[in-house]
Image (cartoon, rainbow, N blue to C red):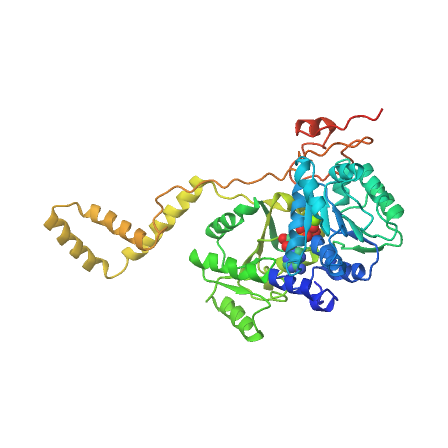
Length: 500
Ligand code: ADP
Ligand code: MG
């Protein structure tokens, strides 16, 4: 993890304000390295995994350099899918929220041309889109690149796999000679390397390496989960895991407090741990965890640096880390002083490729985490209720309470058992969830199969086949195969007409 702060990087002050509003604590490693290079106007080749913060690594410096008074295309970003185009466009709006007159326009296949043409006519400083549709607009003359100051190829290897290489080259060839260029990719297959050599002259290279280090005595688990079900999944994990103390890692300071509040509302003794707390408050939180006054801490990487509390039995990576360094540091918060520890990583479908990276980095396999079935969960809750009830049965006051209930039963001519039921319902109304009355529902979980090309209406290229040797394999399930022309067809991709 870098000690570098955002304020030291030379970003525009309005951009910096936006970053602090979003709640980013420190730049991720790729951000710390890429931002100064892009701010100086150099070309850049960035090689880093998914989830390392590449969007901000290019959006923040490029936004810092645009001419805000001119509403013509200044930054163009190419992404492999419609979803990513939208995500990146949203990130730009977030980081430019303090700019007056800022316009970002997402452009992708599958969407009607009319709103796109309107948007282009209105003008935008930043255009983000998929290569096929971008090329269409370029050819129609509705998109002009003569004013372009910077071009970014995001997830270049993914665009290659989806067969966009020729479209990308055609777009690159239409950009001004002095246009700054950046290429981001998780891998560097030869065709990407060639594009870089041709179009990114004198590029500075930034590579976020994954270092190998063994993580002894820590059992590593991975739980695939849809982003919107992460909280549900976490709640269940905390319900079934027999933990002493747990540390949960999230990305932002804001998220530490939000998540801590949600867990507190579910009855956990939990506190946030982030860089906004002063030294004394942080020490107090750690002390509370050490002594058992708190059982869960929700932390950012920075705030948990070096944390050493022997009773931490579990590390839960609620958000994936920036890099394997950070992951190794996080899981190292458990398994202290020769004890065993357990680490659980939540991954959303987009973040699947982290599995292999982390397995390689830690030199040990990750096991699929099995959430309990609804029936098992129900049984557990019942057992827990029973155990609590039995614990109270040994209380000295029971005899007195029983006499009271007997009196009530007799006067009303009722079975005393019915009154026990009534009491349990009363308890439930005061403390919902105490009595396991309703069977929990199963959580839908995504598979760990690799991502396929999406049906975003993009056409296939004229030359070359989609799919390649580098298609990601899932670590513990067999991949269903490479995306093929047939596969693309099945998913509704329109093949591009062959050139006469
Ligand atoms: P990549 O493009 O490398 O896959 P993204 O740019 O999509 O990664 O970032 C992944 C997530 O990390 C996003 O939710 C983003 O908001 C968050 N993020 C990026 N930079 C930071 C940072 N410096 N601090 C905290 N969170 C960050
Ligand atoms: Mg990205």
